[in-house]
Image (cartoon, rainbow, N blue to C red; front, side, top):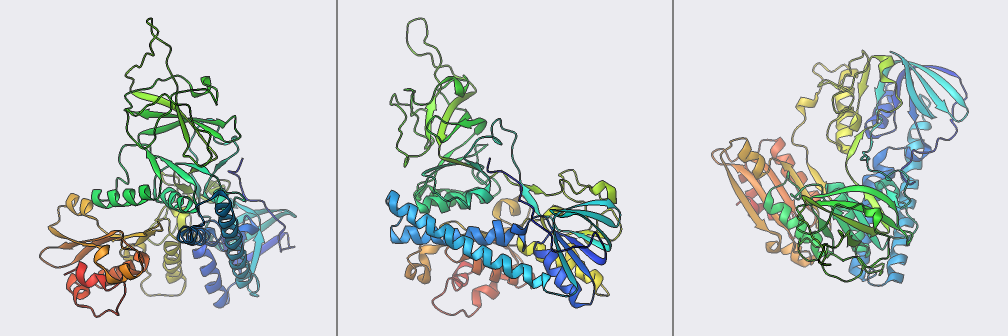
Length: 538
């Protein structure tokens, strides 16, 4: 099974017991930055990391940076036409994986030595668990190491949330994002369970490589938290890449397929044809009715499922028994059951705080109802002198939030008269790296309306931006929400080339309480995507 825990390796420490000023559990962005700062201030620090494959944290090893490396390689493959034949697709994918591994290996090594080479820092590779309020035991390949620390910082990040689907843990070919980014061979067909932004990034990436991608969405609405016009534009972009969507789809079971792939039993609510017979009652390779999975509910045909590996996931009705007159009996059930056959499955159903095995109760550290470490606005846990940074504390799951968590913690340790708190944090932006990147900050129209604000909507098509035409990337739209009477920028949504850079300008203006007229009248260099803000806020 490809969903697994990292392998532990030997520890660089040979001492069975260590007393230190600070213990940081996890080598993520916030923790490693705090370790370096504490060391520079002359304090002794121990950093415990469960796996040598995770020095530096999620972002550089299995998150943002390796995924962006692959996304850029996929975009290049699409531009060069390398995704057009099986041979060129495999070669492009192999080269992309090789480059991704080079980048992550280099960054991992640099991150390790940045801490381990400092006299005040000891890096121990092993899984840590609390044995008391200020004591931790680290299980290493060479035996346990006991650590007692005056201050402890939990920085263990988050782990993929795996839904309770029969067969999901035992079927080969089922992956989280970690495993899917480290395949040696490119899947010709890919089913993604979950249509959140992580799943959509992978859908866009693999579609650019030439994989036939099908996304299963649990409910009927695509990106329900986004404005309808923005969501529609994102969906249209993905469909133009060849990504197919199946809505109201619940995966009931996963099992190996007869052809060596993966077979999913999927129930689709609202289908007007189908049955509720078990998927495994219809053997793979039999002549079931085939359904076009582009979305229409009455597009059933009587052709057999295709075996062409470049086609999308084969989707077959599970038929009911014939009626007394010999004709097929199509009931009108609340849901129809289908079998999907694919080469690989990505489970992209979110991430959950990584607290398993920490034995937090031994230290008096409590969890929230959602399973995150409970913290206050200073990121203090319910135990004295223990803090939690990054994804493990239930905040926004971004590397730059983990870095900002470091600022919150450090402001309490450096003697500041007024510590910086989570409540001081302003306007967190986000970017999703699709073929046309989507970035946003602040409120969208849906949220502004729900809040009862008096606002105006600003819109601009990316095709109207000269630099986008020069780059041959005219797809997308820009949208901003501005308070009517004050000119205050409430939020912005940019589905545009280079939106991940431009959104930071909007955030800065919002942080400084600059009115929309500031961006309308700002002098930008030309030609750039940023200068589109002149017209967007006009």
